[in-house]
Amino acid sequence: MIVVSVIVGLVAVVMASQWINKQTNVSAQKVVIAAVDVDLGSKLTPEMLRLVDWPSGSIPEGAIIDPQTLDGRVLKTSVLRGEAILESKLAPLGTKGGLSAVVMEGKRAMTVRVNDVIGVAGFALPGNYVDILVNTTEDAKANVKEKVDMSISKIVLEHILVLAVAQEASRDDTKPKVVNAVTLEVTPEQAEKLDLARSVGTLSLVLRNQVDPKPVETSGITKQILLRGDEPAPVAKPVAASKPVAKRVVKKVIVKRPAQPAPIAATQNCVEIVSGTSRHIECF
Image (cartoon, rainbow, N blue to C red; front, side, top):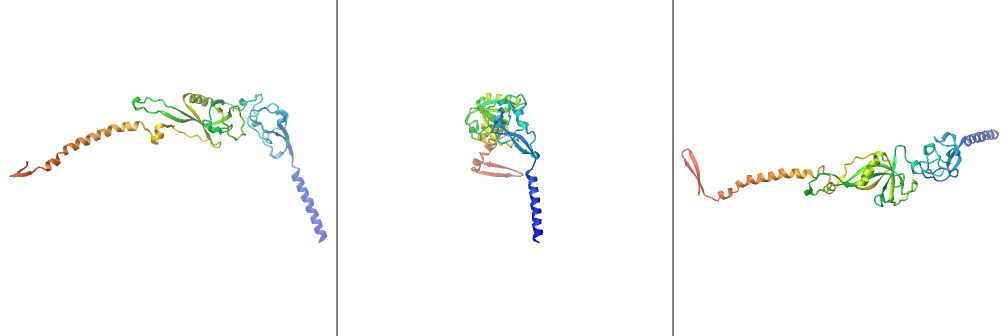
């Protein structure tokens, strides 16, 4: 029994060692990763990169295996230390460094002036999404005597990417920064709207959730709706209703006036005189 148990134990040890060797001897391949944190728009240099062993079965798509091919390439997204350098994170070949390498194809970068309030107290950072709100005066042919305030606030652009604040394009800093300018990524049509909006009124940035791209349709808010409540037509309805109300009041007064002598007639003495088939009343 002792001999059998020893043999079984040796067989178990050999099988376990073989299984462990198979698990440790996983095939690996060299992959380029970032040696330091690299901001978007930066040109890659050999000092920023290093090679590490990466399991062959889990190499991400687009991984770079030769660091020499990355010399001079520009990142279009920020990369953290230890993160693999992928082709999808690189700007096209020949791209110069800077913010222009970050702007997506078909879009433009536009800068607007902000302050500590308009810029959401400095929390609108690169990589965040904002809505653009404009406060202006609505054009309308209103009666001058009524002195109607046509001020209106309206969201004109939604889900706009913040590329940079002031002269910094780093997306890793989560601390608020009070700056005087914010650079936004917009389409050519959105750039036209934004340029007109900042010329006709005051702009405000509205910070939104990064994972909430759903647009919201709003009709804007005016001063009268703000003070009187949500009314579909706060100006037209009272004017149209005032005329019929005045006519009804006049009619009621005209109907009641003939009934006023009735109390006086009640104080007189009246006698009904019957003569044959006729009758009449005499009052005195």
